[in-house]
Image (cartoon, rainbow over all chains, first blue to last red; front, side):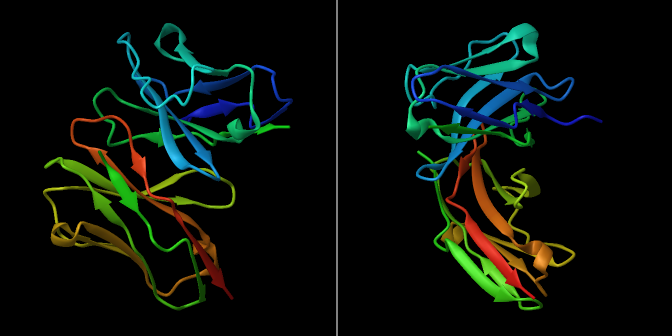
Length: 114
Length: 114
């Protein structure tokens, strides 16, 4: 079956521009997670969605970061007014509800902010 | 708060050597899960193993083995008879039993030379 997909695979943007990163979870997975992998900070949690519940945004590094999940499926991570320190690989994962112990990761989006 | 430490940032071995990757964790939870992931040059996170805190039995899967010791809060990973294809970054991670976000260690880059 299809795994978690993310698009674009690579994104180069200029400082100050907004970017949107997309994640398509595995069908039937109502839980969705965003992580960021950067040189300085390693792999860190950003945000978690479960069904229609309010998301856990505790990992978002600033208010320039936001995420939404439409129809309980596709998720978009938006970064406004990008900064060079936002350069990283953004990873999405999904799982069945209450199965955070079995997260399936997508291939990631590599974001480069010039 | 959760913390995972992988003290070895980079290890280089020659093919067929055995190698152990160290992982030490900190948590106040009595129930938790520990993981190892492999990240090859392609960038995707590949799940290797999950262990819950109540199961201290060592596990072997082919050339891979894992040693979980609660007394020392360690979850070490050994590759026997390493191969060039084992070259990757390996991450250890922790998930609280009632939590949703993985806490990752900084990763260990393993280079296996022919």
